[in-house]
Image 1 (cartoon, rainbow, N blue to C red):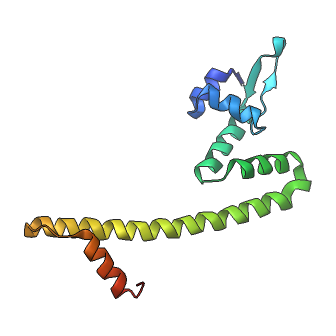
Image 2 (image 1 turned 90 degrees about the vertical axis):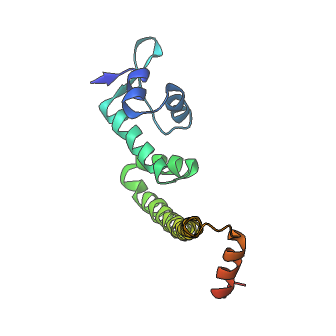
Image 3 (image 1 turned 180 degrees about the horizontal axis):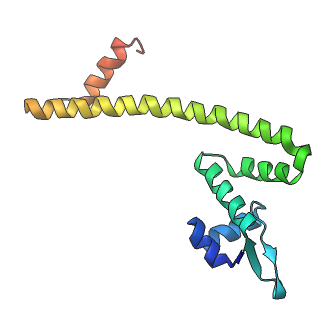
Length: 139
């Protein structure tokens, strides 16, 4: 089965502009038919979905391009693809730790405000934050 750019864009949830950009960057390479019109195969669709999935993990455009070039090399590109994925996993794990710390702070802020609403008091969140940092030995 083949798809025109508008059809595949709708199917995978991106704009035609995005697909053209990905094509320009070498991430997605549609087939060309009569009059040089683009058309996408099921394999193109799956590859575009894979690129979007990796993008959702936070992979950079540069790494996506490098991964795509390595993929095109077949077996010769496996070591490079593995290196890209391992490096990216490290970045994702670091971001996850940052998100966990930020979530803890948000929960503390929410608990603080809920507690003060229940007590019907106005208090300074910043002072509580500073005290918490002092208690943790950060300052």
